[in-house]
Amino acid sequence: MTDIEHQSEKEKLSQLHGKAKAEYILTYYRIYFIFALIAIIAVVIIVNAVENAKKESKIGVAVLNAANYDLQEADDWQNKIAQELGFGEYEYATVTMLNYPTADSQMTEESIASQEKLVTMVAVRQIDMIIAPETLNRSFAENVDYFLDLSTYLPEDIYGKLQEEGRIETLTNSEGQTFPALIHLTQEEISSEISLQMEDPTIGIVANSENRDNTIRLLRRFLGMQES
Image (cartoon, rainbow, N blue to C red; front, side):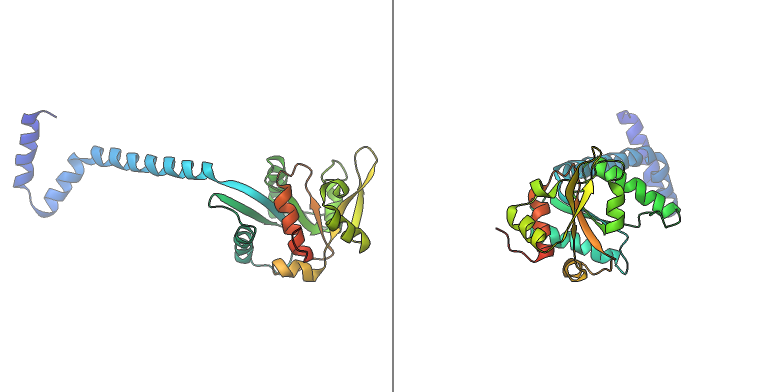
């Protein structure tokens, strides 16, 4: 805009009042408002992207086919995990509650979505631990090696305690080898961390887990064991 055009616009604007003046400003300067808004949105997106890039998941827990739970409490639990395990400002825990389909259940849109979500989260290494009824956790190992060998993954004190108490269940991998894969929990141990109901709860450590230390620390909490 030239100085003459700018002066002309100022004169037009000075002659208008009230609603007419507001409408003129909105009409004439609309393009500038749009550019300003786009610039603000772009800044917000960039800031959020930078902040999110700093964040790192330090443990992921999937809880499958639980009953009588509150999603808000699940959110509170993941915040509690982050706090009690001493995570930093940009570190976080993920707790995902899913209603996963079983051989005896009817497939619904929700269960299909849960199935796809779990597979995706495991594939991108967002899940370290799966808490589910034993029959469901067993079904995961039918076609692929879903869980880790607990005898090589767990510290000796935890593995020894679980063996002594007869709380370890074995699975057979794709090569026909049997290995210790699931840990039985009691309802009381589940409830010590989060209020929910589950039939025959077990824990399996996902084969591609990348957060061994924090997974073991959370397992100690379930079992009421002090950190070594």
